[in-house]
Image (cartoon, rainbow, N blue to C red; front, side):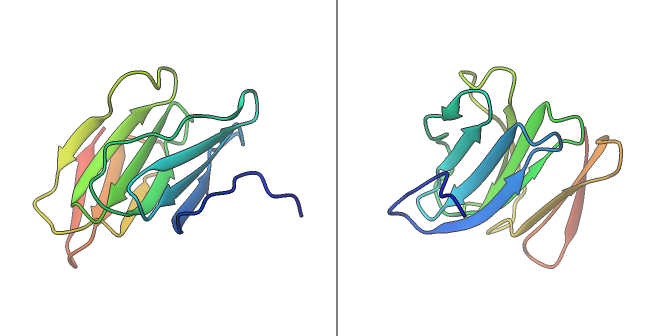
Length: 120
């Protein structure tokens, strides 16, 4: 197997976009590392204040959602990564898991035993 991304920071989550255009890896340092099939390794995405536990891509591949030990959910626009992410405040101490429903209209998040649903 070939190594696509190398980092000295531990990685806690990885996910492929639906079409396979992106591979994302969430680090212990709160950064998201992205590999683009078209552009190779992209600069790390920053914003989380704690390790990234969960990454999920929208079913249409236009956005990526991350959750971390800071309790926030970030929505990243994959069409314009220069824009800061949209932040969803969850009022939980951490986000361990994220999932979209089949058509991407609802996002589920959890970290404290409660599942929260967000209309997208």
